[in-house]
Length: 105
Image (cartoon, rainbow, N blue to C red):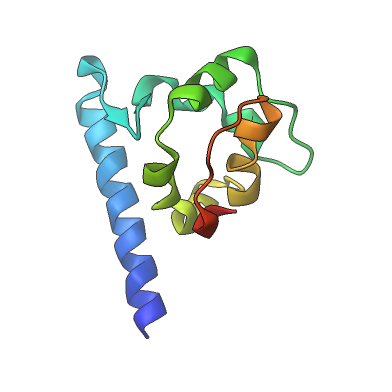
């Protein structure tokens, strides 16, 4: 039962961030050091059955992302058709030696 409550809380947090991003869109809201208006730059590399490699623009975003913060949303990513293991593989694919929190590997 605790797992269900935990997942529900994560989904609620993501929903709140999405709403904030929509409301603050003109102001340029930021989620985990990533401007919400640029989140879609990495979407092709983390979705679908055979995703392409990340683009240079995606890699620039990943370079500045707060991976500890993003890790908090790992369980909610599948609800947005984002494969968590692909998402947290982006730093390596972008050839960045960034520390991935153990709970996100």
